[in-house]
Amino acid sequence: MKFMKAVILCGGRGTRLRDETEFKPKPLIEVGGMPILWHIMKIYSHYGVKDFVLCLGYKGQMIKDFFLNLDMYQTDVTFNTKTKNVKYHSNKKPDEWSITFADTGLDTGTGGRVKKIEKYIDEDSFFLTYGDGVSDVDISKLSMFHKKHGKIATVTAVTPLAKFGVLQLQNGMVVDFTKRDIVHGSRIDGGYFIFKKHIFDYLTMDNDCMLENKPLKMLAKDKQFVAYMHNGFWQCMDIQQQVDMLNELWQKNEAPWKVWKG
Image (cartoon, rainbow, N blue to C red):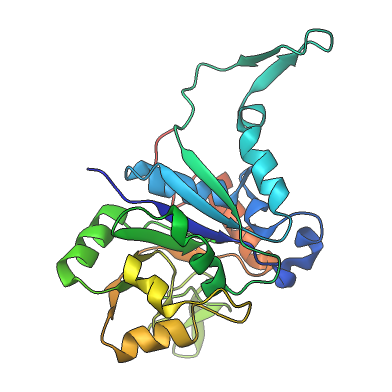
């Protein structure tokens, strides 16, 4: 099955993770030794999405450098300082991705960033997500849902994990305690959107054009916005506790978003 492109928002400053984002863009913060952006792209790639547009901004050159030197990060290498020859010590087949690095400005809003990459979208629809959230959402089913409903926009609606320890009580006694219980009730925007190209009619290149404000509100008003209910795992990475949690899951081989092999 041929899939459309995946656009990933990578330009924000990530101020709530200032200790790390002072030195690198948020999408390069590592989970299991690799940037969370790489994890997101591996999720899409597992379902056949190989063509990416990265909306760069804050420290965007570092994201370019990472992918241009990706083989260096994934295997041992031998470098000859005289001949400049590089030998990679790996038999692992690299991911065959096509990546467009689009400079969308330092302080551009999310909607403005998407508008600025319009020229790179050559199919009727495209995926879009944030560069800081992982999920075990089935991209194939999400795509089929979007096509079935025929609206301009589809968003993956998720149930967030609890921010605090959840107590299970019985006769005043704590019988279970977890920090990863699901909060039942309201769903939130989990990213992993699909948009038809008509979305560009709702966007401007202004710095204050935030996708999550007027554009999505207008789509809802026009009855062009549907939600794909995802009941599985989803987690964004806004604070250090969430970075630590994702790393812990990876180290224990319990990462639900790792749908790919190898």
